[in-house]
Image (spheres, one colour):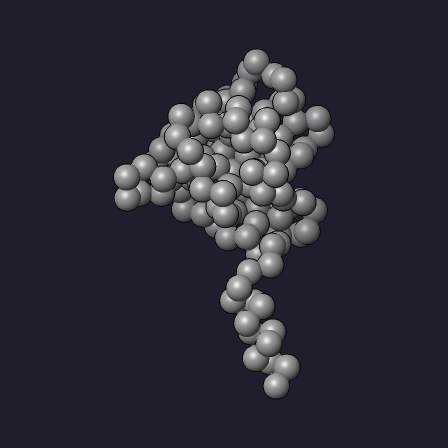
Length: 123
């Protein structure tokens, strides 16, 4: 069964907005990071790559840099040992939607701008 990539991304956006999705940095799970790198065949950007555990599987949001361009990939792992693993989008497919998801995911983590805003607002 072929699934619509945009529908999957929209569902992840919905879950993330509703705080029903707990994302983690991809580099915190080296096995998953290595398997993802094997599929995409280029190194990931640690501050922009994440994963989420769903049921027994994982969905990976993988930020890769090619020359001067950044591409975002979604990779589905039914289980960590699954042989049937798939990158859900091509290089140019759904980049805006995945970027929306990535921005929501990044908001779940502390960042310098929020930290500095907090300092300045306490004066």
